[in-house]
Image 1 (tube, rainbow, N blue to C red):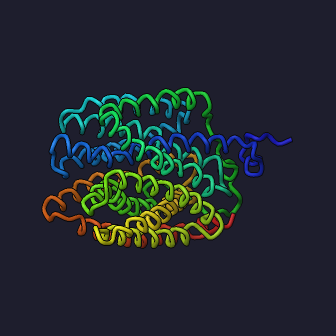
Image 2 (image 1 turned 180 degrees about the horizontal axis):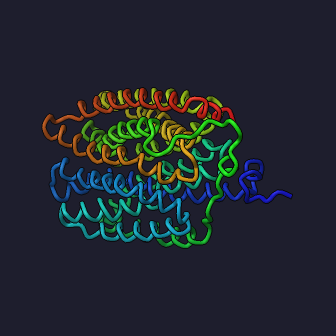
Image 3 (image 1 turned 90 degrees about the vertical axis):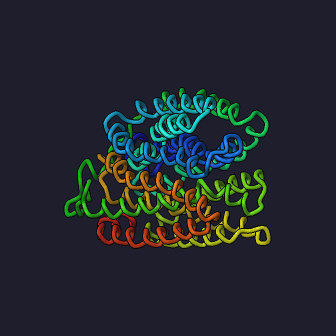
Length: 413
């Protein structure tokens, strides 16, 4: 009888421990994604209470992206060496402490330190790099599907907590809301992640590579730089839209609670898009799915920039196109990376590949806020999103070509 906890048996059995790992990563991604998503709601509350400029306030989010960028490689190496049971519970504790500290913010400096460093470090310890590394090791043939399910938690958490945070702010103030989030996240997740995570095995093909298999790219190779550049471009677009969409919708005449509810719907559609993107990536090919989903996301950005009091229905269409498109694009891009790089060092490579994304995401929110402060409109900032997203298509295509038969072989597996 095959051991259900081995890589070979796991692909054919629902008893496979990897599916439990998918469930755990869904929960942690839901937590990290929700906290990132709620900043756009708290951002409006900060502007109202303190009267800070949009550019200065957005720097709090920008600093969080710098922390993510500078720590992702080291955290990926920690996951490679120590496994999820040692790393992820520490992240839950740090995140809970950071959210509690956010309830005491009275100055921009405190915002930058508590959110930009402490909260951001907690999110990075439980977030994209460690969870993607864990899931990529448990699966090969169903890798994109498994990643789609696990990482869709990021959008699912936002779907629930973005509107819930708006409610908490209205009922208890933003300080009370942060305290409630701190307790609601740390108390259940800390024991769950400490008790249930276990180190994933190396895939069978890495323990004994098949004769004649093409070599996989490593750190600092050409494929690494192609995906690094694509991530950098993604980071600019994601952060500009993610942070400023609520403020833009409110400026366009959409009520604050309605805008928050739309963000919840956007997160729900990102969840569906991630699941669908994983399924399509395993069947249609990662790069083809990536291009289709990117096109849908671009349509969403065009719709967002044209929302106004007369064309408010475009906000709903924006949510549909961007939610489904971005959800699928993120999963397929991650699966392309997992196909290109060896699992034994995937955490380290993924972490370093995210440096460009994190630094660009740090610059994007401030730049969009500055554009608004100078020009009184987000329209030019959204045009910048369109430009960088189009450029990212070329870099991902180059990475897929560089992967050659290695990527195509895995997509067919």
